[in-house]
Length: 394
Image (cartoon, rainbow, N blue to C red; front, side):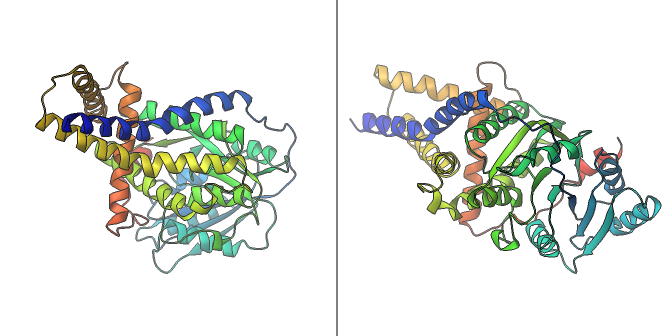
């Protein structure tokens, strides 16, 4: 009898943990069939490129060159978080060598490193009162040709407050493509239905004035998601454009990729927790449903699945599989365990790939929750040096 109660508890927790992924995946698949169309006309608004950097000596010149090749001439605001290498020297020299690359250029050198979100807040204060569009991009991201013009076109729609790009990542390991495809489907689906709360800082643009520094929480990462959520809560739409692409390099090791995902997960979890009063807000309409489901997936699901896994372990240690229920559960558990371990080891294949990707994602979310619970913030992180070295050789 005790074994059956453990089994029922395990099944209930698994249902609670996995249901939102299936539900939201199905919903977003339907929503994405009616994608919002990018306007053909330009908005006529000026654009400012916001480029936060820290120790980007290996790639800063390549990044500036990529931005200068865009078909829309914009202003440049580079904000440096107290780099300890020659990032600033190289940037200044490049701008002197190519004085017509941007409409104008300005550099803010912070006296100490306080994290990217604080750097973005400082830049927003410097841009306060400006009109037009702010385009934030990471130093290790390469924007597609024509990206700036496409961004400008989006803002001719007065409902659009923020637009984000879609990644085409280099150096994918094992389950990364599956993870990216699922993530993109969800973000595009949310955008079609209403708005997505999660855009990527590699390429994100918003209307100047739609976000202020007070909307951001300095001691947390995911500044990009903080921006997109603030835009939507301010009454405008925040969308991911599947045709606005950028490329960036993934960390070269599984450990590096997991570290990156855990850091990102912590930022999203903390954002959702801070916005919990909007989970059931009638005023936010459809967006409250999107927030609620993401909170379920990012916070409740990892906890439910972890406790369910503990019950499964206890049941298998304590009780033998002497019934159809017990035997069936053991088979499912073995499938889940194999899917998780093989995907984690970058050896997934058809039949286990989706399950393994979800379980690895839940693992990263649980680690992020535990890290947060211990009071450790990941908003200031060690740079992925292997990424910079690889990009500098291309």
